[in-house]
Image 1 (cartoon, helix red, strand yellow):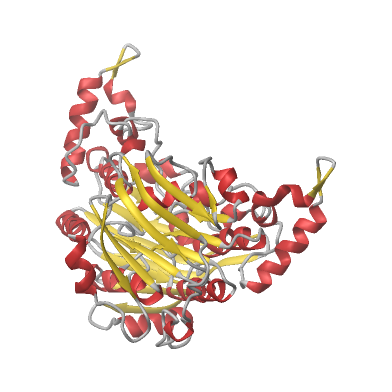
Image 2 (cartoon, rainbow, N blue to C red):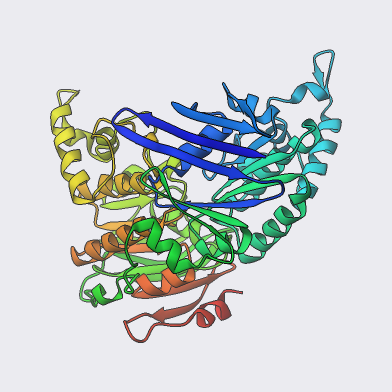
Length: 501
C-alpha cells in the first residue's frame, strides 16, 4: 500500500539516503533499525512530508505522490509519533490532540470545549489513558505525553477514508514493560485498517512486534528480513558491521573509586511529594546509580542536585562546602554538569552550531570585552569532535541536525571541556543505537578514570548493574536498598526489582 523507490536525499556535506527501496503492505508492521546517523530519521521525515526527496518516488497504492508538507501527508493517512514529542506543554491535552483541526468544534468563531473534550476522551480511550482532557500537557509524565502523541495520530481514523500508515519513532523509550505490552496490543488491534513503521533501538521489541525488518547503515538498506529470520545478534552485526563487544558495559574497565575523598555529600534531603530523607556520598571515580520506577523520585533528586529544584529539608555539601544557593549557574560554578533525559529540549540549543553549543557553560573563557572569540570556539570543538568521534559535517553545523547519539556526545563534550567533574546523567543512552551506547559507556569509564564522580539514572536495569559502583534503589521517594557493585559481585535483576515494586 505504501512504497519508496530509489529515494535519495542529501544535505550540505552529507549524503543521508542512497537509492532506498522500501515498502509496507496492508496491515503490516515494518521494523526499521540502524545506528544513529544511518538515515532512519531522514527516511521517516520523507514519508511524513517534512522533507522532499532529491531523487526517487513515493507511492500510495501504486500512485506517485509528492507531499509539500506534513499536513498533506496526514490528509493521505500518514501520521507520526515523534521520539522527542511534538506536544505543546502549555496547552491542554485536548488542544494538543486536535491542534490544527479545531474547526470541527467551532461555531461562529467560538470553540465548543465540551464537544472537544468529549472527542478527546474518545481518542484517549483508544490508548487507554484515563485523564481529564483539560489537563495541561506539561504536567503529565513523559510516558503519558507519549500516549497523548499516539492519541493525536489516531484521530486520522475519523478524518481519512483510506488506510493509515502510522510511524512510531522510539515510542517505547521511556514506557514501562506493562505500557509497552499495552501499546503493542493496541498496534496489533489497529492492523485491520492501519499499517505501522516501527523504529526502535530495542531490538528485542522490534523483533517481537514486526512482520518484516529493514536494517539501515550509512544511508543504505543493508538487510531486509522476516520476523522468522531475525535475531538480535544478526541485526546488530548488520547495523554496525562488526560483532558487538561481549564486555558491553565495559566492566573490565571498572576500577575501585577513591573513598578517601568526597565530591558530594547528601544528608536527609527531602522535597514534599517527591522524595524524603535521602542520604548518600559520591566519591571520585564512582558511578552511583539511582534505580526506581517512573515517578519514584529519582529524577527529582537529580534535578535538585543540579539546582533546578529546591529541597525543603536536608543538606548538600559539594567538595567540602555546604550548598546554600540552589540554582543551575551556581551548580555549574561548583563543577556540576547535567545531561538531561530530553536532550533536544534541555541538552542542546537547536539552531546553534556544534561549537556554540560546546562553549555555552564557559562563554567568559571564550570572549574578550563582550566579543566572542569564534576561532577559539571552533578550535575547541574540532578537538572534541576528534576525541569523541562526533559525526558532523563540521564544527559549524547546526547541532539540531545531528543524530541523537552525536547530539549526546556534544552535550558531554560541553561539560567535559568546561572542566566539570561531577556529572549527572539522566538516561544518557535513551534512544541511542548499540554503537552509540558503547561510545557513552566508554566515556563513562574514561570520566571515572579522570576522577569524575557520576550520578546516573540508567535506561535499563542491565545498564545500571553493568556501569555502577553503587546502586541506590528508590521507591515512593525513599531509599529502600543500597548495593555495592564490584565486578564479579554485582546484584541481579531480581535483587533490584524486589525492592523497586
